[in-house]
Image: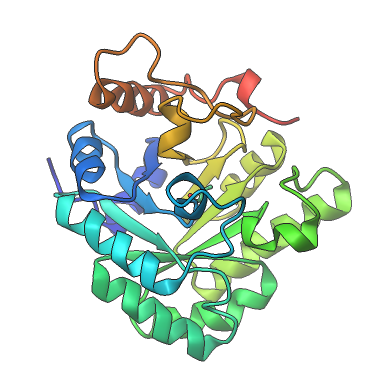
Length: 263
Ligand code: KIV
């Protein structure tokens, strides 16, 4: 299979080809996901919840993100690797530069940061230094204590406008990708159509350029899955077949369906 780069993903957006993204934290699953045809692997800080058992992503450190990125890198043959910057590791542009460097040296092709307009300067600095950035907007789990829970964002007109403006501004600042989490699907669709860079959605409906799910959720290992999760393991003979079913469903637009979206 051909190596997936940022240019590949950009071309997929331009050709209206849906992009499949899946979280991944180790070499074995990286290989399985590669063989199942996943375009991009996200070494998410959800590892704090699904691997480490915490109730949020806040305890995860840069060292842990670098460790898991290196594990994924070793199992990866051709997928694009995005790594999350951990809570507080990009509080200043200087911190961001130092910590993003560690993730890139561990094997990431891009880093992901959560926030809105305040990320602009950091995105510029990282991009100038050779680090492509995905900006995570909408529900930003590292801010769970500010938001007051894992809640759908962008429900009021004012909130929706703020998120749309942030998306446009972050693209102008140099973000090469956006990830939008838990927003009404019409807002996510509007954002995807308003920017030229690929937009990954989770809990954001079918109108985004790409979809991501947490590996453990789509394998049915979470006994309290969110509304936007589908268990792809049901009826499948192997984990690779389940991941392939996810890739196929993203590509043909059958996932997410209306039951997985917020309106
Ligand atoms: O950390 C993560 O896995 C994520 C997903 C929820 C998209 O950011």
